Length: 470
Ligand code: HEM
Image (tube, rainbow, N blue to C red; front, side, top):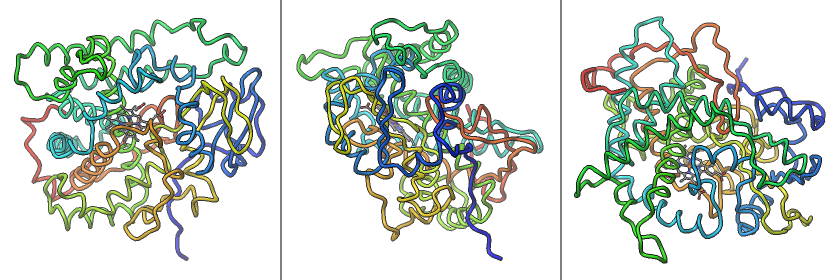
């Protein structure tokens, strides 16, 4: 008997469409738990939830219509999404639209552009190697929370790459814990919108939500102050952004705008990659044949040293594992917009004010697009396999609002996964339950306890404990 590919966990799919109240009840805990089986195969879903029109685009054609062809009409983030992120990001480009978004994007995008990769990648290799060395020293039998650890690692990387300096274990831990709490508290199920309360009516933001955002702001403010007051000549990217002239006025970005964009880069740039890494490490702990195949590639190419940007062309299976992980567990599982003008999707009118939703969670498991859609099959992404359509596989979104850090995020995930998998063996801690949960991002629950053991002889090539802030 041959075993089929590994099928990692996903929430039950309901045999019928749920009522509005059932959906709201489940959505408050997990947005992935509300979908009926039938939703995965539909091209487009039009629903009226009390007073709100909701359009869910779930085919390459309807995704292109919403996010590319009618970007002008559907560019605004939906009110619940904006409200969920505003306490943290202010008017940062992730939640802005129109002229403000265009202006900010022109300043922020070059900071993370693919052309900067050679400058940014050494920080990734360095932090990944330090993390691998620290994991290899973990006492046998004591579980490590791999979700928190990958969060600290990617926070450290974004800090070194974007802010040009080390973050340190305590500050990284503060940000990771605060963002985890922020996600737990934040409510995107906007009952007031369903009850037709206009968007300008202020919604209550909890004291604890504001406090969690405040802890993140304090870390970023300190970084900014250090850099801007650190004297002339420092070549950090964030300093370049601070000094860049705003299109039109020629003046530098004001301090508040600059701080919001720094927080956008910090949050958008670390939480997503952390989740990809945590999911990939979990899947590989369950799918031993894929883990063995990956390690054979790593041993042949790296022979015990940490991965660098130059190694990427030699690591196609590692990249395929990352891409297949993002298909099954897209870090941003729902991309929601509000129509600021009327439009048309699948030949039906969409009224101004409607919420237009594209969900990589649904699209990436659509049976018409993927063979064995719930199974982990990295071969789909190996060189030579037909590439999925650019509107069918969208972990970084698509259209003018596409992620500015696509190349950086991909390179970071591959370098980190290669470096960690070569250095250590990972097993899920006994009794640990893993189930995908989505609030703002898609995570394997609140924690991912795993047992870690060094993998000889590769671990010997990594740096000693003394230099490690991770
Ligand atoms: C695997 C890693 C990553 C994934 C899967 C990812 C995914 C995404 C997605 C899906 C969006 C669009 C959200 C929406 O339309 O609602 C987005 C936006 C964005 N991402 Fe990423 N991202 C990743 C890494 C990064 C990195 C490393 C950076 C920068 C350091 C970054 C910066 C941004 C920014 C600035 C935006 C806002 C773009 C805009 O609204 O114009 N991301 N990302």
